[in-house]
Image (cartoon, rainbow, N blue to C red; front, side):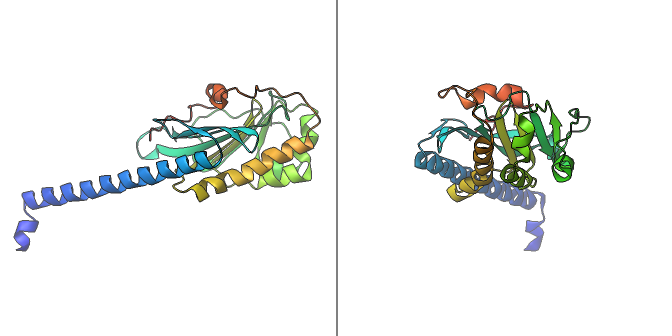
Length: 227
């Protein structure tokens, strides 16, 4: 009996069954992810793209973009990430670049921003800074902001650029609870930045689409991963 299992036809049949199981599992995962994102969007009055994993709107009063994208050079190194962007609404200068990226996620040969110092040893070890205006330094060093910035170090990438906070994590949340958890710490940071900043006019229009800034903020648009 076993000889039939190890025959060419038996091996081919086994591979076909295995492939079908893998595809079915991936399909079910995609359905769970899509259902979770739709439930999250509905719960917060946000809009979700019809053919992409992309949610946008105002989350607790703050413009938000949540999407998926591809990162990596290709092959096994290419992977899916979830990208969250929150508008800081003028709380920090648009020219400020503050970025943290884990060493294992850096692209080979990627340019490193010119380093400026905040004057805090732990922050300076974790983040690279460029375009540090005098009014931005006390905001970033405010204890609540500092603590929340350091709390995001576990993410694949964290940046403040063009007046937006961006946080990336590997993979795609497959439950509304996981999406809420993803937003919690970045949203707390955005709120702390707004509270610590002096009164400044908002730089983004209330109804502006959050992804309008995307092409200038990163090497790839989020939302490129189709549902």
